[in-house]
Image (tube, rainbow, N blue to C red; front, top):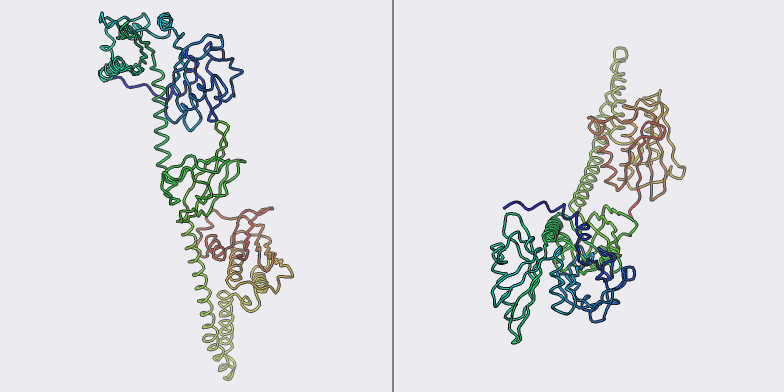
Length: 556
């Protein structure tokens, strides 16, 4: 067997195929209105297309026929036979094949004219349409078969019809023909032809009976539906691939009807995430699923953290991406739900750990500072007093060394425990830090700008400590690595809100800033900020250099 041709070209060629078909084809929208037609001037139209387009199905033709058409618009293909006047005033028989379009976009209707109501006229009219369908006739009494020229062209060679069918289709053909003759069952069947290249025919048959009511002969039209079959198969394959992808992706997907805020389609993962049985998600409201309110229809929306609390009782943090759609005049919203609960929990655990480490760091430095002050500091002071009581002279050098040791101890205390922070607050500690830095860097202009109302303002201990340590780290980075001419520290805010800034006019951040050894770096500053619920931003300043900004707001 030769491999079937690629389905994708058939999918792309579907509009051209519809236009090339001699039969009348039209589209019915989801709202049961006529929306498109393959031949606007087709002779089989009930009325000019301009008067039909956009009209409801129920408003065209006899009421009972309109109801039958509406009832045939279902989720599965349907066939319908009826009689209707054409726009030329001729009453003709039709057979319609109604198939649903993907994604609820409506239905495709192909209507074949079976000819006038008189059976003999229909037979000869079809025989004359050699360029469209072939005619097969079986004389039962004579046990002979007739094939019209078009039928011979379709089959490729003369001979009994059954023998030219694919082996797997010969049995179904004989069974359908037997049921038609014995019970009057409709005979409308798709058949494959034998041969290496896949070819399909649609056989529609009817029986003429003799005066005793016995079958005399069977007549059938043969239509080449190979292109239609390939198109149908391509559509089926495409739907199957989409279904497989839709239900296996590791994110929840829901398609909402905006007007009712109900789910019209969802995948298995969404049910799992929300704790709903998979088959019961469709039809649920956004409120029941914990997804209300839905994002608007103004464009693509991304919500980084939406806490979902569906009625099923589960709870999760999710990233929500919503994309508005318009399909068949219906406003839809495609929502993708990504479970980030593990990430949120990890970030919360990391913040808790950072806060614990900061608290431990603060306690450790306090204990170390206390030990240096009470032990080493007092010991050195006693030694100096003892030396003062002895003879002067050679001991001057020792006294100077001891004085230097005391200064170094005091500097260690400054480094370990921010001076004035606990006793006088953040503003006083920052001012003292600037004074100390000026002595060490006389060539750099250091400034501190603090709102007057904040000079005596106190905030929670952990907040003041984190802000001071971040300001100190920012100053150290600027002075040590940026080679600035000036560095400014600012502190603005209110009792429940603070904005801390450190700006310089230096060379900017190094590419390896976060990995540089010897200090906490950007990662450490971010973790200090995260521990108190603050937001840290670091980037280029307006006039060059680097701008560090930290914003903290008291929790509600």
